[in-house]
Length: 529
Image (cartoon, rainbow, N blue to C red):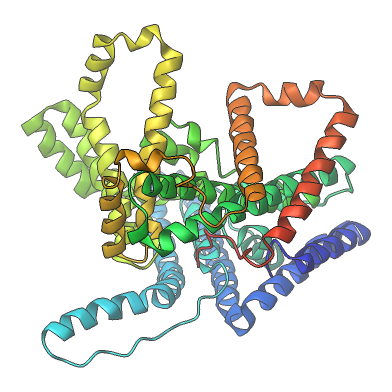
């Protein structure tokens, strides 16, 4: 069920009506029914994998709760218990919880990995077999269930938090099921945490006009990003990447930059729709973007882009690896050989390798995604290592005298670097990716500037170019005002009739552009299974 279909909004309207009509104690049951409806309509029989995740997550959490109760009972049964005795009992509880957690993770991550990466593994095996003259192994061609990456990671994050004692497991199967299956965040996220999403998702809600109005406005803005910017620019982007040999020099650069804008509008548009639909129900989803195209470095970009994915990897991969015995031992050796600075950085670098390899593979089952992740890692680590030299360079050119100009330079530089790296995730393979990079440095002869002989928006109609560029500029301006903290003040000072007129114009533009792109509009680009 597509987020940009009439059926989806009819589905949401029916949900909102029933959600607020039924008694509050029935609201979660209604939501679970609609979650199941959405999942079954999208995945059919493959929904059984989500059912497995729900049941194993609930069961593992209940077992961990039982271990916690047994620990407290055993501690209470020992009169004048010593600190050492309590520590030993706690160690037993943690060991038992770790076994339960590992079993649940092995099953759920195992299902996810087998479905998503079996063909990738077979592809690499077949390359080796081809060299040896052995016949290929047939591909499995598994069909991916809807949102398996998102619900698996969200559920396992919940169990990891329970095992760490961050909060007790929920004893209600209904609550766990609603949390895992909540449909707005299944397709592209965010990676919801139980201790944040659960606060608003699992409580009763009264009908609130402000929630309805804010949710509707957020959905409208998200649809405008998707239909007016992403889908319109997608016509040019598809043309560029569909015939790489034909476009060099400025056209290759335009392809990269247009794709970066298309992806941002598409992905953030989805998030606006997901957050808007949730707001209709009084539920608050975690924000996934913080104006990423105003980033001053690649590292800063990844703190602003897909925020919940970054925090998931930070909490459940980076910290455990960097603080683990192996990383700390390596850091100790580095401290002795290279000094205290490297002693601190080496464990982080080791953890970052794990994070970025997994990040690459999470985005796609292909080597180009692994190299895309490692390329981001290289730039981040290189920048960290070169920071002392950067600081000297900034002092030499007196960049502090013109902080605004320096920030603009860093923002533009970061946007170009990110756009350059994104090519790896857009081309069909390494050969096409290398061709694109090669084309960037060819075809810069002066002839391309001749009026009437070039266009940076191939196959796009004039009206589509104008509307896509106008709304792209509008998106950037909104981000700038939000970054400066002035956006809410601007909205507050704007008269109500002006705001109503703006929303009406947005709706009209959306309807017109939806008709123009009816044959090219597809699902969201960032859908991860």
